[in-house]
Length: 389
Ligand code: GDP
Image 1: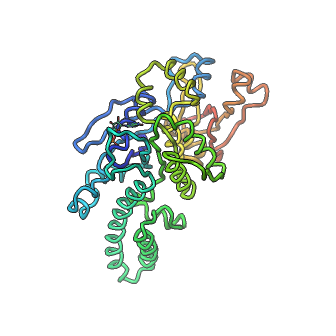
Image 2: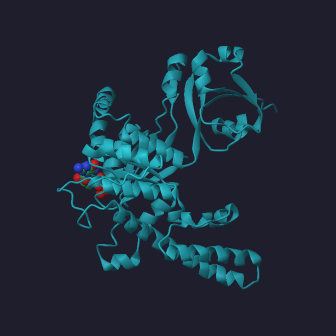
Image 3: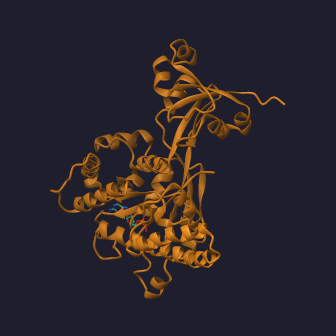
């Protein structure tokens, strides 16, 4: 089952435009379905520059990429539109979609377009983020308070477990009341796993997708790089100001941030791949923004990729960071996990310097690893296994 990123944001921020660009860039492998709650869902391939060179060498019958799922859900920012909806908060349909997401891609508009009105009347991504966070934190607050009620009753039995749970819930309640994100509350891993079943929206890993005007895309990328290096970027004007503010917030929170022009991406997605790359180069951009969104999203999910390569298939596989060799083997087939003997591991970079497994063995570039080996991103793995009787 693919892991899911929910694309959320205010109305008219460019969510659907981005979704369309993503599904084209990443070549959707299942068509997208529109359900009754205005959600577009698509499984997209994660671009991986290592597969093409491997396929050059092995000339496999099939090349298979890893995938993630994106779901584009309308339904935020409605609270500003009527006081009735404000009281009711986010709709159950909307919540149904985002509670199950593994991470959030939050689209923030900085692009200027007179023909596309902003629900608050002007462009301010910092305010928009506050507004989205308020909706999410208030929803989480309601969840936590319902749980506090239940746990308070249960705690009357005197069971220490419930007392501890109450203490954690109250800490969360205080933070959410101040409109802080649940992810910013310091929790031990035991406390965090206790809260898993609440599916808190502000606990999910998040990336900010700044939807910028095409003209400032280059400058926006420079700003994101500078802020990631710890520079301050004070002297900027106009649209770039909002970009700096969001990038600084992301850094403080440990969230990822990407700048794209959703409209440009959607246009590029219509072009043949070569033409799109030529056009990107003419703009001084290294790769499609849609590809970056997919790659950063994948990273956000705490996933790494290992590879298998042969004449039948060159393939990228997903495992959670920290997974050991047998678990990785199990992604391919449960028999391989069950009968795991060892893993023959060659680093992708090492393999490319020699061009074959035989040469890798000869040069001492292939390692034999046992069941405690922690698989690394970019390992090309061949599993030895024996299922016997
Ligand atoms: P959603 O409501 O968040 O799904 O927003 P849409 O994707 O439907 O976009 C709303 C409008 O903004 C559409 O008319 C888009 O063409 C326009 N739009 C989206 N992205 C951009 C952009 O990067 N630049 C400009 N100028 N317009 C955009």
